[in-house]
Image (cartoon, rainbow, N blue to C red; front, side, top):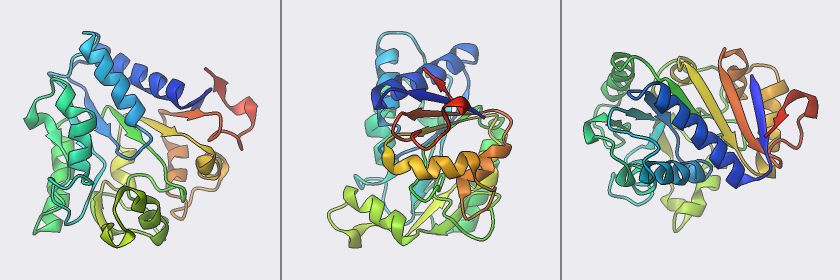
Length: 249
């Protein structure tokens, strides 16, 4: 596990975007695993700027998003489909057929989840998976629980996650209570994982991810076993880590 600590959110976002750009330079037809939430927005802005400057090309790229709210239409401004289009897809030259996001409006959840995992497999697997992390150390929408889920599945969101996401909705009652998410097993199959975290509120989750026992109660702890993972943090989210364990960039 490599840990890179940047001075602030902007520098963290730039470093993450540079890593994605390097991946696309090496492999123009890369398969990217993408995340939503406030943390990667800065990275997406940097990637859009790089594209506009002609530094990177998305014409051969395929993407798979981590998750989507269950029974929330794509047209809803809080859907992750809408989020990805507003923050990235509408501003780059990615082909529509190469964009993959779980269908939260499916009437056959089991088939949707199975097909999603199959599509990732058929694409050759995820080359680099971007992750954020929740205050309770969830990755994707894999909440603290008694076991690690292998594949994409439907999950009941914890109250803490619902409360954290309420800021995006008019009221907490509007926040979906379920979501479709790649399982920790699906995430773990990615060839490279890049986890981003910003803010003091994530410091405890990062500490437990790096130093804690590997337990499904701390979903991100499973990343300790991955053979190619980098944490890109700002100073606040890294505040509980031992300085000898990370590199300042």
